[in-house]
Image 1: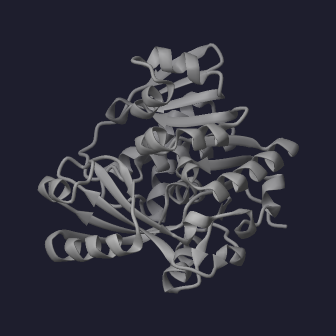
Image 2: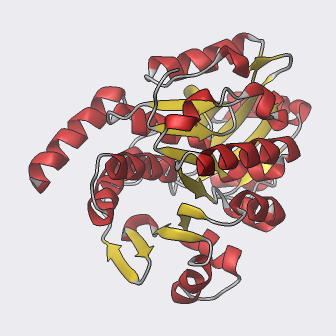
Amino acid sequence: MATVDLFAIGNALIDQEFKVSDDFLTLQNLQKGTMQLTDGETQSQLFSKLKETQIYKGQASGGSAANTTVAFSALGGKAFYGCRVGNDDLGALYLQGLNDAGIQTSTQSISQGVTGTCMVLVSPDSERTMHTYLGITAELSNTEIDFSSLQTAQWLYIEGYLSTSDTARQAVKQARQIARDNDVKIALTLSDPAMVQYARAGLDEMLDDGVDLLFCNEQEALMYTQTDSIEDALDKLKSLSKTIVITLSANGALIAHHDEIFTVPGRRVVAVDTNGAGDAFAGAFLYALNAGKDLQTAAKLAILISSEVVSKFGPRLENTEYATLLNSFQLETA
């Protein structure tokens, strides 16, 4: 049985990234900064329009939790990704992309069907808007996940986007039980304001009796708790998680752990593409905690890594870039 530090469960999507105009988003009736689910035919039509009129920037083995495991692995952690892909060319490409990034996967993830895709649309203000056809990943279940390495992992990481799927939530329930039975810490991200707005019941189910670490951004925190201030949001979130991390975009992050609450300032960069920033933050934060660092140090590393992701197109850095950034961070904080 392979040993990993991080066992993550999430959607498997091939990201197709485009640089788009605000007019294009308006014309396609897309709400900026959110994720919208669609069907295969509509996705194909949008892809054709994008290729004809907008600027194509490339593709990657995406998905929110996948991006998190890439950052975690590239920094030096060992990670496994549980997902579902189709038995098609994109499915093979997806798993190979994760394996190339040092992430363990299982052939158990492959099943009959079509691998999902996500059109990642980056507007001039660097905001990302996502148009997603889940394909076979919409039916992710415990059948496609090899849970063996979860028993000895340090962390279970759950992607909030799974809240829309009945079968995925059942897989999460099984993963949570395995984690609790084996003293594996549980982390969950709310993922997107759209999940809070349209799949709140699913998020509640996955949070169940609480987690050890909850990631969200400011908008998600306020929406989920139905409050008007971060302070009030924290009061409510404390009943769900031992540690709460609220990202504040360029302003850094707010961390609450028991009665301790503190902020870590952001790092100023020229924002190019916010896609994957929160995912990278979570991956770096979890890596630092797993390496025995305190919460403040974890937040500082996470801000460094995520700000570098924001300064480039795409949801990830090159593998060597993570190592270089970690080395410079360690020298500065030694």
